Amino acid sequence: LANLGTSRPLLTFVAEGKVLAVWNSSRDNNIASVWGSSYTPGGGWSTNEVVMRGTLSSGGMGSTRFVGLKAVASDYNGNAILAFENQVLLPSPANYELNLWTKRYSGGAWADDSTAVPVGSPFSCLNCPSISGVRLKVNALGQAVIAWFAPSNTVTDSVPLWAARTNA
Image (cartoon, rainbow, N blue to C red; front, side, top):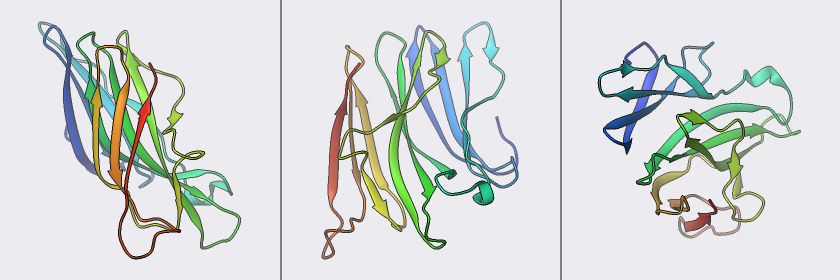
């Protein structure tokens, strides 16, 4: 799984000895994307695949230019949820919006779409440096609880703790 530009490797056990690995990689034009692979006992590692791809910053307003892996968790049924932040360019040249999103892994494959974490529409912070301390847990129904620290444009004297629950 190792290659140049790889960082933040995370593992979770998904079912019957199967392991899911996710990591950030900037090997595609130095744009951070999230990659994944799964390990099956007796079968080995699957081919590495892009789970969520960032784009070049010249991609235009509204384009995602950075995808940062934050957490991964799984339930006992072989499903997993990945939490990641992305940076979206705004019309002002020096502005970007930082958002927190989730993506599901079920039936041995990643979902085609991602879901905004349900705090506001979605949680976002204008020109914030980073989302940190992300913790993610998944219950038997596939619902996730996610908590994180992030600067806020409305709270200036501390770094607020945020939390949300996603539905199955």
